[in-house]
Image (cartoon, rainbow, N blue to C red; front, side, top):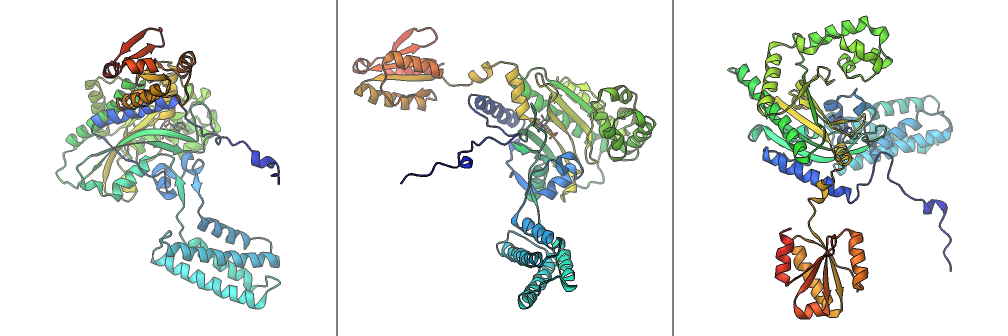
Length: 541
Ligand code: AMP
Protein backbone atom coordinates (compact mmCIF):
# COMPACT_ATOMS: atom_id res chain seq x y z
CA UNK A 1 0.00 0.00 0.00
CA UNK A 2 1.35 3.39 -0.87
CA UNK A 3 0.95 6.31 1.49
CA UNK A 4 -1.13 9.20 0.29
CA UNK A 5 0.91 12.28 -0.67
CA UNK A 6 1.09 14.64 2.32
CA UNK A 7 -1.52 17.36 2.23
CA UNK A 8 -0.36 20.88 1.53
CA UNK A 9 -0.56 21.96 5.17
CA UNK A 10 1.54 18.94 6.21
CA UNK A 11 4.29 20.20 3.96
CA UNK A 12 4.12 23.68 5.44
CA UNK A 13 7.54 25.20 5.94
CA UNK A 14 7.75 26.59 9.43
CA UNK A 15 9.49 29.87 10.09
CA UNK A 16 10.46 31.67 13.26
CA UNK A 17 7.60 33.92 14.38
CA UNK A 18 7.88 37.57 13.29
CA UNK A 19 9.98 39.51 15.76
CA UNK A 20 11.80 36.37 16.95
CA UNK A 21 14.92 34.89 15.39
CA UNK A 22 17.44 32.10 15.60
CA UNK A 23 20.87 33.04 16.83
CA UNK A 24 23.29 30.91 14.88
CA UNK A 25 27.01 30.14 14.72
CA UNK A 26 29.31 31.96 14.22
CA UNK A 27 27.25 34.83 15.78
CA UNK A 28 26.58 32.80 18.91
CA UNK A 29 30.32 32.82 19.64
CA UNK A 30 30.07 36.59 19.96
CA UNK A 31 26.97 36.26 22.17
CA UNK A 32 28.85 33.87 24.43
CA UNK A 33 31.86 36.16 24.52
CA UNK A 34 29.62 39.08 25.54
CA UNK A 35 27.91 37.04 28.26
CA UNK A 36 31.18 35.62 29.59
CA UNK A 37 32.54 39.16 29.77
CA UNK A 38 29.43 40.24 31.68
CA UNK A 39 29.89 37.41 34.20
CA UNK A 40 33.56 38.28 34.61
CA UNK A 41 33.17 42.07 34.95
CA UNK A 42 30.08 41.95 37.16
CA UNK A 43 31.76 39.46 39.47
CA UNK A 44 34.68 41.82 39.95
CA UNK A 45 32.13 44.37 41.23
CA UNK A 46 30.72 41.83 43.69
CA UNK A 47 27.50 41.02 41.83
CA UNK A 48 25.96 37.53 41.94
CA UNK A 49 23.78 36.04 39.20
CA UNK A 50 20.02 35.59 39.60
CA UNK A 51 17.93 33.54 37.17
CA UNK A 52 14.28 34.35 37.69
CA UNK A 53 11.54 32.51 35.75
CA UNK A 54 10.48 33.97 32.42
CA UNK A 55 6.81 34.13 33.37
CA UNK A 56 5.27 35.72 36.42
CA UNK A 57 1.86 36.98 37.54
CA UNK A 58 0.67 39.68 35.14
CA UNK A 59 -0.12 41.80 38.19
CA UNK A 60 3.58 41.95 39.14
CA UNK A 61 4.45 43.67 35.87
CA UNK A 62 1.32 45.84 35.97
CA UNK A 63 2.41 47.21 39.32
CA UNK A 64 6.14 47.48 38.68
CA UNK A 65 6.20 48.70 35.09
CA UNK A 66 2.88 50.56 35.30
CA UNK A 67 -0.54 49.32 34.14
CA UNK A 68 -0.89 52.31 31.79
CA UNK A 69 2.47 51.99 30.08
CA UNK A 70 2.61 50.66 26.51
CA UNK A 71 4.82 47.80 27.67
CA UNK A 72 2.09 46.46 29.97
CA UNK A 73 -1.13 47.59 28.32
CA UNK A 74 -0.26 46.77 24.71
CA UNK A 75 2.89 44.70 24.46
CA UNK A 76 2.65 41.97 27.06
CA UNK A 77 2.38 38.30 26.09
CA UNK A 78 -0.37 37.13 28.40
CA UNK A 79 -0.63 33.38 28.85
CA UNK A 80 -4.26 32.31 28.80
CA UNK A 81 -4.79 29.51 31.25
CA UNK A 82 -7.66 27.00 30.91
CA UNK A 83 -9.56 28.59 33.77
CA UNK A 84 -9.59 31.97 32.11
CA UNK A 85 -10.64 30.51 28.76
CA UNK A 86 -13.46 28.49 30.36
CA UNK A 87 -14.68 31.52 32.26
CA UNK A 88 -14.53 33.75 29.18
CA UNK A 89 -16.39 31.12 27.18
CA UNK A 90 -19.12 30.63 29.82
CA UNK A 91 -19.64 34.36 30.15
CA UNK A 92 -19.52 34.83 26.38
CA UNK A 93 -22.05 32.05 25.67
CA UNK A 94 -24.50 33.27 28.29
CA UNK A 95 -24.36 36.78 26.79
CA UNK A 96 -25.25 35.74 23.26
CA UNK A 97 -28.64 35.84 21.48
CA UNK A 98 -31.00 33.50 23.19
CA UNK A 99 -31.69 30.32 21.26
CA UNK A 100 -32.31 27.05 23.18
CA UNK A 101 -28.97 25.71 21.88
CA UNK A 102 -27.12 28.67 23.38
CA UNK A 103 -28.95 28.17 26.61
CA UNK A 104 -27.78 24.54 26.65
CA UNK A 105 -24.24 25.54 25.80
CA UNK A 106 -24.21 28.21 28.51
CA UNK A 107 -25.24 25.69 31.16
CA UNK A 108 -22.62 23.23 29.92
CA UNK A 109 -19.87 25.87 29.89
CA UNK A 110 -20.58 26.91 33.47
CA UNK A 111 -20.52 23.22 34.47
CA UNK A 112 -17.14 22.89 32.76
CA UNK A 113 -15.86 26.07 34.45
CA UNK A 114 -16.80 24.99 37.98
CA UNK A 115 -15.37 21.51 37.26
CA UNK A 116 -12.09 23.10 36.17
CA UNK A 117 -12.09 25.32 39.27
CA UNK A 118 -12.43 22.26 41.51
CA UNK A 119 -9.66 20.46 39.70
CA UNK A 120 -7.37 23.49 39.92
CA UNK A 121 -8.04 23.82 43.65
CA UNK A 122 -7.40 20.10 44.22
CA UNK A 123 -4.11 20.21 42.34
CA UNK A 124 -3.21 23.50 44.06
CA UNK A 125 -2.79 25.17 40.72
CA UNK A 126 -5.26 27.74 41.97
CA UNK A 127 -4.91 29.17 45.44
CA UNK A 128 -7.85 31.08 46.81
CA UNK A 129 -8.34 33.05 50.00
CA UNK A 130 -11.34 32.35 52.28
CA UNK A 131 -13.56 34.84 50.48
CA UNK A 132 -12.72 33.49 47.05
CA UNK A 133 -13.39 29.96 48.32
CA UNK A 134 -16.84 31.01 49.50
CA UNK A 135 -17.57 32.56 46.10
CA UNK A 136 -16.41 29.39 44.36
CA UNK A 137 -18.68 27.27 46.61
CA UNK A 138 -21.66 29.55 45.94
CA UNK A 139 -21.10 29.43 42.20
CA UNK A 140 -20.62 25.66 42.25
CA UNK A 141 -23.88 24.96 44.06
CA UNK A 142 -25.76 27.49 41.92
CA UNK A 143 -24.47 25.87 38.73
CA UNK A 144 -25.24 22.35 40.01
CA UNK A 145 -28.75 23.32 40.88
CA UNK A 146 -29.22 25.03 37.52
CA UNK A 147 -27.83 22.02 35.71
CA UNK A 148 -30.31 19.72 37.47
CA UNK A 149 -33.17 22.04 36.64
CA UNK A 150 -32.06 22.18 33.03
CA UNK A 151 -31.84 18.36 32.82
CA UNK A 152 -35.27 17.96 34.40
CA UNK A 153 -37.07 20.50 32.24
CA UNK A 154 -35.03 20.55 28.97
CA UNK A 155 -36.15 24.17 28.42
CA UNK A 156 -36.93 25.35 24.91
CA UNK A 157 -36.70 29.06 25.71
CA UNK A 158 -34.99 31.40 28.16
CA UNK A 159 -38.11 32.59 29.99
CA UNK A 160 -37.31 34.97 32.81
CA UNK A 161 -35.58 32.67 35.28
CA UNK A 162 -32.61 31.76 33.06
CA UNK A 163 -31.39 35.32 32.38
CA UNK A 164 -31.49 35.89 36.13
CA UNK A 165 -29.65 32.64 36.76
CA UNK A 166 -26.87 33.47 34.30
CA UNK A 167 -26.56 37.05 35.53
CA UNK A 168 -25.88 35.67 39.01
CA UNK A 169 -23.44 33.04 37.66
CA UNK A 170 -21.57 35.75 35.77
CA UNK A 171 -21.45 38.05 38.78
CA UNK A 172 -19.90 35.31 40.91
CA UNK A 173 -17.56 34.08 38.17
CA UNK A 174 -16.07 37.55 37.69
CA UNK A 175 -15.40 37.87 41.42
CA UNK A 176 -13.17 34.81 41.50
CA UNK A 177 -9.64 35.98 41.15
CA UNK A 178 -7.81 33.80 38.68
CA UNK A 179 -4.25 34.87 38.45
CA UNK A 180 -3.21 35.59 34.92
CA UNK A 181 0.41 35.07 33.95
CA UNK A 182 2.58 36.83 31.41
CA UNK A 183 5.95 36.42 29.76
CA UNK A 184 8.26 38.96 31.32
CA UNK A 185 8.75 42.21 29.41
CA UNK A 186 11.67 43.11 31.71
CA UNK A 187 13.31 41.63 34.79
CA UNK A 188 13.55 44.35 37.46
CA UNK A 189 10.10 43.41 38.77
CA UNK A 190 11.16 39.74 39.05
CA UNK A 191 14.38 40.62 40.87
CA UNK A 192 12.43 42.73 43.38
CA UNK A 193 9.85 39.95 43.77
CA UNK A 194 12.67 37.48 44.46
CA UNK A 195 14.29 39.87 46.95
CA UNK A 196 11.03 39.98 48.90
CA UNK A 197 10.21 36.28 48.53
CA UNK A 198 13.61 35.13 49.79
CA UNK A 199 13.81 37.70 52.60
CA UNK A 200 17.02 39.03 51.15
CA UNK A 201 16.77 42.05 53.43
CA UNK A 202 18.13 39.71 56.10
CA UNK A 203 21.28 39.03 54.08
CA UNK A 204 24.20 41.47 54.06
CA UNK A 205 23.08 44.72 52.42
CA UNK A 206 23.08 45.82 49.72
CA UNK A 207 22.24 42.78 47.62
CA UNK A 208 23.90 43.10 44.23
CA UNK A 209 22.31 40.92 41.57
CA UNK A 210 22.58 40.59 37.80
CA UNK A 211 20.69 38.62 35.18
CA UNK A 212 21.00 37.65 31.52
CA UNK A 213 18.06 36.38 29.54
CA UNK A 214 15.20 36.81 27.08
CA UNK A 215 12.41 39.38 27.46
CA UNK A 216 9.17 39.54 25.50
CA UNK A 217 7.33 42.56 24.14
CA UNK A 218 4.80 42.64 21.32
CA UNK A 219 6.39 45.66 19.63
CA UNK A 220 6.51 46.45 15.94
CA UNK A 221 9.64 44.57 14.82
CA UNK A 222 12.43 46.48 13.07
CA UNK A 223 16.23 46.55 13.09
CA UNK A 224 17.29 46.49 16.74
CA UNK A 225 13.75 45.88 17.95
CA UNK A 226 12.46 42.36 18.44
CA UNK A 227 9.56 40.64 20.19
CA UNK A 228 11.93 38.25 21.92
CA UNK A 229 15.07 40.13 22.82
CA UNK A 230 17.77 39.71 25.41
CA UNK A 231 18.76 41.89 28.28
CA UNK A 232 21.74 41.91 30.56
CA UNK A 233 20.86 43.82 33.70
CA UNK A 234 21.82 44.40 37.28
CA UNK A 235 20.12 45.72 40.40
CA UNK A 236 21.43 46.91 43.76
CA UNK A 237 18.81 46.54 46.50
CA UNK A 238 19.31 47.80 50.01
CA UNK A 239 16.95 47.50 52.92
CA UNK A 240 16.36 50.75 54.81
CA UNK A 241 16.10 50.20 58.55
CA UNK A 242 14.13 52.79 60.55
CA UNK A 243 16.73 55.04 62.17
CA UNK A 244 15.68 58.25 63.91
CA UNK A 245 19.34 59.38 63.98
CA UNK A 246 19.71 58.99 60.23
CA UNK A 247 22.36 61.32 58.85
CA UNK A 248 20.83 62.54 55.59
CA UNK A 249 24.05 63.99 54.22
CA UNK A 250 25.86 60.69 54.71
CA UNK A 251 22.99 58.74 53.14
CA UNK A 252 22.96 60.97 50.07
CA UNK A 253 26.71 60.60 49.66
CA UNK A 254 26.47 56.82 50.02
CA UNK A 255 23.66 56.54 47.45
CA UNK A 256 25.62 58.70 45.02
CA UNK A 257 28.58 56.34 45.32
CA UNK A 258 26.35 53.32 44.69
CA UNK A 259 24.92 55.01 41.58
CA UNK A 260 28.38 55.89 40.30
CA UNK A 261 29.67 52.35 40.92
CA UNK A 262 26.77 50.84 39.00
CA UNK A 263 27.34 53.20 36.07
CA UNK A 264 31.09 52.55 36.21
CA UNK A 265 30.38 48.81 36.06
CA UNK A 266 28.37 49.11 32.80
CA UNK A 267 30.98 51.41 31.30
CA UNK A 268 33.77 48.98 32.26
CA UNK A 269 31.81 46.17 30.62
CA UNK A 270 31.39 48.16 27.38
CA UNK A 271 35.02 49.18 27.51
CA UNK A 272 36.14 45.57 27.89
CA UNK A 273 34.03 44.68 24.85
CA UNK A 274 35.48 47.62 22.87
CA UNK A 275 31.93 48.76 22.08
CA UNK A 276 32.31 51.62 19.58
CA UNK A 277 31.08 55.18 20.16
CA UNK A 278 29.77 54.71 23.69
CA UNK A 279 28.07 57.83 25.11
CA UNK A 280 26.71 58.07 28.61
CA UNK A 281 23.99 60.59 29.39
CA UNK A 282 22.79 61.27 32.90
CA UNK A 283 20.10 63.30 34.60
CA UNK A 284 18.35 63.65 37.93
CA UNK A 285 14.57 63.54 37.99
CA UNK A 286 14.35 64.47 41.67
CA UNK A 287 11.80 62.71 43.83
CA UNK A 288 8.03 62.63 44.08
CA UNK A 289 7.42 65.60 46.42
CA UNK A 290 5.76 68.98 46.10
CA UNK A 291 9.03 70.85 46.67
CA UNK A 292 10.73 68.74 43.99
CA UNK A 293 9.43 66.79 40.97
CA UNK A 294 5.71 67.33 41.64
CA UNK A 295 6.21 71.08 41.73
CA UNK A 296 8.25 70.89 38.54
CA UNK A 297 5.66 68.75 36.76
CA UNK A 298 2.91 71.23 37.71
CA UNK A 299 4.99 74.07 36.24
CA UNK A 300 5.80 72.00 33.14
CA UNK A 301 2.10 71.29 32.66
CA UNK A 302 1.15 74.94 32.80
CA UNK A 303 3.90 75.85 30.33
CA UNK A 304 2.81 73.05 28.02
CA UNK A 305 -0.81 74.24 28.12
CA UNK A 306 0.40 77.55 26.68
CA UNK A 307 1.93 75.84 23.62
CA UNK A 308 -0.59 72.99 23.36
CA UNK A 309 -1.76 73.95 19.85
CA UNK A 310 1.74 73.60 18.47
CA UNK A 311 2.23 70.06 19.81
CA UNK A 312 1.40 66.76 18.11
CA UNK A 313 -1.59 64.63 19.19
CA UNK A 314 0.50 62.28 21.39
CA UNK A 315 2.09 65.12 23.30
CA UNK A 316 -1.23 66.92 23.67
CA UNK A 317 -2.65 63.82 25.33
CA UNK A 318 0.40 63.48 27.54
CA UNK A 319 -0.02 66.97 29.01
CA UNK A 320 -2.70 65.35 31.17
CA UNK A 321 -1.46 61.76 31.49
CA UNK A 322 2.33 62.02 31.71
CA UNK A 323 3.82 65.43 30.87
CA UNK A 324 7.39 64.35 31.68
CA UNK A 325 7.30 61.91 28.79
CA UNK A 326 6.82 64.82 26.35
CA UNK A 327 10.49 65.62 26.97
CA UNK A 328 11.26 62.24 25.30
CA UNK A 329 9.57 63.32 22.07
CA UNK A 330 11.56 62.78 18.88
CA UNK A 331 9.14 64.77 16.68
CA UNK A 332 11.11 67.31 14.69
CA UNK A 333 8.64 70.19 14.96
CA UNK A 334 8.34 69.81 18.75
CA UNK A 335 12.07 70.20 19.37
CA UNK A 336 12.29 74.03 19.41
CA UNK A 337 9.24 74.14 21.71
CA UNK A 338 10.68 71.60 24.14
CA UNK A 339 13.99 73.49 24.20
CA UNK A 340 12.27 76.46 25.84
CA UNK A 341 10.50 74.46 28.59
CA UNK A 342 11.62 74.75 32.23
CA UNK A 343 14.40 72.34 33.21
CA UNK A 344 14.09 69.97 36.14
CA UNK A 345 17.64 70.70 37.37
CA UNK A 346 16.43 74.21 38.30
CA UNK A 347 13.61 72.80 40.42
CA UNK A 348 15.23 70.01 42.43
CA UNK A 349 14.93 70.08 46.22
CA UNK A 350 18.16 70.56 48.20
CA UNK A 351 18.64 66.83 48.89
CA UNK A 352 18.20 65.87 45.26
CA UNK A 353 20.54 68.65 44.18
CA UNK A 354 23.18 67.48 46.66
CA UNK A 355 22.78 63.90 45.48
CA UNK A 356 23.05 64.83 41.79
CA UNK A 357 26.18 66.91 42.38
CA UNK A 358 27.71 64.00 44.30
CA UNK A 359 26.91 61.50 41.52
CA UNK A 360 28.71 63.71 39.01
CA UNK A 361 31.68 64.12 41.35
CA UNK A 362 31.88 60.36 41.91
CA UNK A 363 31.76 59.67 38.18
CA UNK A 364 34.58 62.14 37.60
CA UNK A 365 36.61 60.51 40.36
CA UNK A 366 36.21 57.21 38.52
CA UNK A 367 37.19 58.68 35.16
CA UNK A 368 33.72 58.02 33.71
CA UNK A 369 32.81 60.56 31.01
CA UNK A 370 29.21 61.69 30.90
CA UNK A 371 26.99 64.23 29.24
CA UNK A 372 24.08 65.79 31.09
CA UNK A 373 20.72 65.50 29.36
CA UNK A 374 17.90 67.25 31.16
CA UNK A 375 15.36 65.54 28.89
CA UNK A 376 16.20 62.04 30.11
CA UNK A 377 13.15 61.08 32.17
CA UNK A 378 11.14 58.14 33.52
CA UNK A 379 7.38 58.15 33.63
CA UNK A 380 6.64 56.42 36.95
CA UNK A 381 6.48 57.89 40.41
CA UNK A 382 8.87 55.49 42.12
CA UNK A 383 11.74 56.41 39.81
CA UNK A 384 13.89 59.03 41.48
CA UNK A 385 17.10 61.00 41.21
CA UNK A 386 19.62 59.29 38.93
CA UNK A 387 18.53 58.28 35.42
CA UNK A 388 20.97 57.35 32.70
CA UNK A 389 21.09 56.09 29.16
CA UNK A 390 23.97 54.81 27.06
CA UNK A 391 24.06 54.92 23.29
CA UNK A 392 26.45 53.21 20.89
CA UNK A 393 27.40 53.45 17.21
CA UNK A 394 25.93 51.75 14.17
CA UNK A 395 22.37 51.30 15.43
CA UNK A 396 20.40 53.94 13.51
CA UNK A 397 17.41 55.29 15.38
CA UNK A 398 17.35 52.45 17.94
CA UNK A 399 20.73 53.48 19.36
CA UNK A 400 20.07 53.10 23.11
CA UNK A 401 21.95 50.07 24.39
CA UNK A 402 21.33 50.63 28.07
CA UNK A 403 18.85 52.40 30.31
CA UNK A 404 18.96 52.69 34.06
CA UNK A 405 17.98 54.56 37.13
CA UNK A 406 17.19 54.70 40.83
CA UNK A 407 13.85 53.35 42.08
CA UNK A 408 13.78 53.54 45.86
CA UNK A 409 10.02 52.96 46.20
CA UNK A 410 9.58 49.90 43.99
CA UNK A 411 10.17 47.03 46.43
CA UNK A 412 7.70 48.58 48.87
CA UNK A 413 5.16 49.02 46.09
CA UNK A 414 5.43 45.26 45.51
CA UNK A 415 4.65 44.52 49.15
CA UNK A 416 8.23 44.40 50.49
CA UNK A 417 10.05 46.35 53.17
CA UNK A 418 11.38 49.89 52.57
CA UNK A 419 14.24 49.32 50.14
CA UNK A 420 16.49 51.46 48.01
CA UNK A 421 17.14 50.33 44.47
CA UNK A 422 19.18 51.22 41.42
CA UNK A 423 19.72 49.21 38.28
CA UNK A 424 20.06 49.10 34.52
CA UNK A 425 19.15 46.94 31.57
CA UNK A 426 21.37 46.52 28.53
CA UNK A 427 19.80 45.48 25.22
CA UNK A 428 22.07 42.57 24.30
CA UNK A 429 20.79 42.30 20.71
CA UNK A 430 21.72 45.93 20.09
CA UNK A 431 25.04 45.56 21.84
CA UNK A 432 25.88 42.67 19.52
CA UNK A 433 24.65 44.58 16.45
CA UNK A 434 26.89 47.49 17.34
CA UNK A 435 29.90 45.19 17.83
CA UNK A 436 29.18 43.53 14.49
CA UNK A 437 28.76 46.86 12.72
CA UNK A 438 32.20 47.82 14.02
CA UNK A 439 33.39 44.81 12.01
CA UNK A 440 36.03 44.04 14.59
CA UNK A 441 35.65 40.33 14.23
CA UNK A 442 38.98 39.80 15.97
CA UNK A 443 36.76 40.06 19.02
CA UNK A 444 35.19 36.74 18.12
CA UNK A 445 38.14 34.88 16.73
CA UNK A 446 40.57 35.94 19.42
CA UNK A 447 38.50 33.96 21.86
CA UNK A 448 38.37 30.79 19.82
CA UNK A 449 40.72 27.93 20.71
CA UNK A 450 43.12 26.70 17.99
CA UNK A 451 41.27 24.59 15.43
CA UNK A 452 42.96 21.41 14.18
CA UNK A 453 41.68 19.16 11.41
CA UNK A 454 42.98 15.59 11.74
CA UNK A 455 43.74 14.26 8.27
CA UNK A 456 44.17 10.52 8.72
CA UNK A 457 44.76 7.68 6.25
CA UNK A 458 45.01 3.99 7.07
CA UNK A 459 43.67 1.77 9.85
CA UNK A 460 46.62 2.30 12.21
CA UNK A 461 46.52 6.01 11.61
CA UNK A 462 42.80 6.04 12.43
CA UNK A 463 43.37 4.56 15.91
CA UNK A 464 46.18 7.08 16.54
CA UNK A 465 43.89 9.89 15.26
CA UNK A 466 41.15 8.95 17.75
CA UNK A 467 43.69 9.09 20.60
CA UNK A 468 45.19 12.34 19.37
CA UNK A 469 41.73 13.92 19.12
CA UNK A 470 40.99 12.90 22.69
CA UNK A 471 44.25 14.38 24.04
CA UNK A 472 43.98 17.58 22.04
CA UNK A 473 40.36 18.16 23.08
CA UNK A 474 41.30 17.50 26.72
CA UNK A 475 43.82 20.33 26.31
CA UNK A 476 40.99 22.64 25.14
CA UNK A 477 41.84 22.49 21.44
CA UNK A 478 39.04 22.29 18.87
CA UNK A 479 39.43 19.15 16.78
CA UNK A 480 37.57 17.95 13.72
CA UNK A 481 37.99 14.19 13.20
CA UNK A 482 36.53 13.20 9.82
CA UNK A 483 34.47 10.00 10.01
CA UNK A 484 35.77 8.74 6.65
CA UNK A 485 39.21 8.23 5.23
CA UNK A 486 40.13 10.98 2.77
CA UNK A 487 43.02 11.49 0.41
CA UNK A 488 45.31 14.13 1.94
CA UNK A 489 44.54 16.69 -0.79
CA UNK A 490 40.77 16.35 -0.20
CA UNK A 491 41.30 16.47 3.57
CA UNK A 492 43.28 19.72 3.35
CA UNK A 493 40.63 21.26 1.13
CA UNK A 494 37.92 20.40 3.65
CA UNK A 495 40.04 21.64 6.55
CA UNK A 496 40.34 25.05 4.84
CA UNK A 497 36.62 25.15 4.09
CA UNK A 498 35.80 24.56 7.74
CA UNK A 499 38.14 27.36 8.78
CA UNK A 500 40.73 25.17 10.54
CA UNK A 501 44.10 26.80 11.23
CA UNK A 502 46.03 23.53 11.25
CA UNK A 503 45.88 20.09 9.71
CA UNK A 504 47.40 17.23 11.65
CA UNK A 505 48.65 14.75 9.08
CA UNK A 506 48.54 11.15 10.23
CA UNK A 507 49.43 8.38 7.78
CA UNK A 508 50.61 4.90 8.69
CA UNK A 509 54.23 6.11 8.17
CA UNK A 510 53.85 8.90 10.71
CA UNK A 511 52.36 6.50 13.19
CA UNK A 512 55.18 3.98 12.71
CA UNK A 513 57.79 6.73 13.19
CA UNK A 514 56.00 8.39 16.12
CA UNK A 515 56.40 11.82 14.56
CA UNK A 516 53.37 13.76 13.47
CA UNK A 517 53.18 16.51 10.90
CA UNK A 518 51.34 19.74 11.62
CA UNK A 519 50.51 21.88 8.61
CA UNK A 520 49.70 25.57 9.05
CA UNK A 521 46.96 26.10 6.49
CA UNK A 522 47.42 29.86 6.07
CA UNK A 523 50.99 29.56 4.67
CA UNK A 524 51.34 25.84 3.91
CA UNK A 525 54.39 25.40 6.18
CA UNK A 526 54.85 22.07 7.96
CA UNK A 527 56.49 21.09 11.24
CA UNK A 528 57.21 17.64 12.65
CA UNK A 529 56.46 16.87 16.30
CA UNK A 530 56.29 13.97 18.69
CA UNK A 531 52.85 13.84 20.32
CA UNK A 532 53.82 15.52 23.65
CA UNK A 533 55.65 18.28 21.79
CA UNK A 534 52.68 18.80 19.54
CA UNK A 535 50.40 19.29 22.54
CA UNK A 536 52.86 21.75 24.07
CA UNK A 537 53.05 23.69 20.85
CA UNK A 538 49.26 23.96 20.41
CA UNK A 539 48.62 24.79 24.05
CA UNK A 540 50.97 27.75 23.81
CA UNK A 541 49.00 29.33 20.95
P1 AMP B 1 13.94 49.25 28.76
O1 AMP B 1 13.72 47.99 29.56
O2 AMP B 1 12.74 49.58 27.88
O3 AMP B 1 14.45 50.41 29.58
O4 AMP B 1 15.10 48.91 27.73
C1 AMP B 1 16.43 48.73 28.09
C2 AMP B 1 17.22 48.38 26.85
O5 AMP B 1 16.71 47.16 26.31
C3 AMP B 1 17.05 49.39 25.73
O6 AMP B 1 17.99 50.41 25.85
C4 AMP B 1 17.28 48.56 24.51
O7 AMP B 1 18.68 48.44 24.26
C5 AMP B 1 16.77 47.19 24.89
N1 AMP B 1 15.42 46.93 24.32
C6 AMP B 1 14.22 47.34 24.78
N2 AMP B 1 13.22 46.87 23.99
C7 AMP B 1 13.81 46.16 23.01
C8 AMP B 1 13.32 45.41 21.88
N3 AMP B 1 12.02 45.29 21.61
N4 AMP B 1 14.23 44.78 21.09
C9 AMP B 1 15.56 44.87 21.34
N5 AMP B 1 16.07 45.55 22.39
C10 AMP B 1 15.22 46.19 23.21
